[in-house]
Image (cartoon, rainbow, N blue to C red; front, side, top):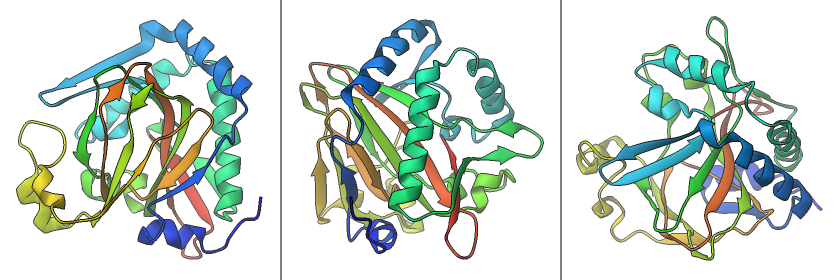
Length: 253
């Protein structure tokens, strides 16, 4: 595969809304991981909100920005439970991202006192589940915490499709980057933003298939359409640059 130097900037600017590598992971790798995930059923957690339900294996930092210590406690607790196949998948994808975006380093973020961040999170979208319109910006959401991830630049999201749903479940990305003025559209006591924040903006839809790896800029508004049929299972993480030359990055979830 020919790597293009412009890919990183194209994703940051959303000239390319989502960079997709189709069928990049062999079926046996995702099949082994899904089999192993069944053994972790007791560690899967459901977070319920008025307008959404998030079912995950592994903690995600956005839920704990007001209590980072709890996030790191959960990271430590779940590490012994996670299957080796998940660690292998994570390492493989990190190496691929480094190659595709011509990075010199991509490592799991490490907090000097609290410890290592979660390197990825597995998400389960069952029949009828959707994710509301939102954006991700750790520098904004964890501002004032002093966490090392708030210092990154150019935050991106990488997702691996482990199992595709029967239909629906498309990732919809709008050509609208978050701005402070958008907070008037934040839905109180719920996840995400009112649809009005993206009125009139173009969007791109992508329906991932098993084995696909895709990267996008999560600071642009995005949502996941309602899943139909088979559970949509993905593994994902954020990563951001840590050096002025744009060659070193850290990852977290």
